[in-house]
Image (cartoon, rainbow, N blue to C red; front, side, top):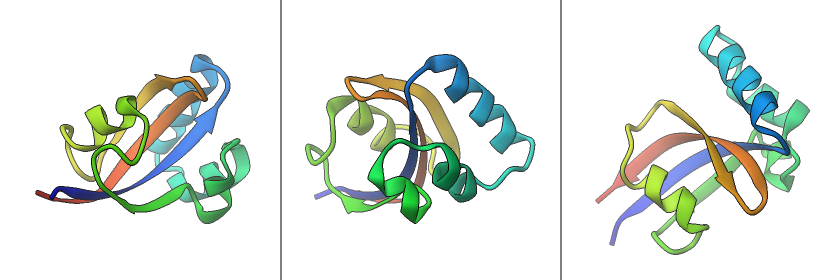
Length: 93
């Protein structure tokens, strides 16, 4: 079964999400921004979600984490919780 590891950053609005993505693209540390801005408890761990399988997270996460490029920051991804930036750190098929 496929498994992946990822970290994410959760904010309430799309513009904030886009602003944070630009900061990361300009060299800011994903984990530090997650600690400062993420409204998810995982933010205290730099956004680390650990390892999970398809179906463990909301469907919008699975679509990105199990289909998009590893090592890149994806998003904004909208879920019922808000807007996420997702960084896929590893994936095994």
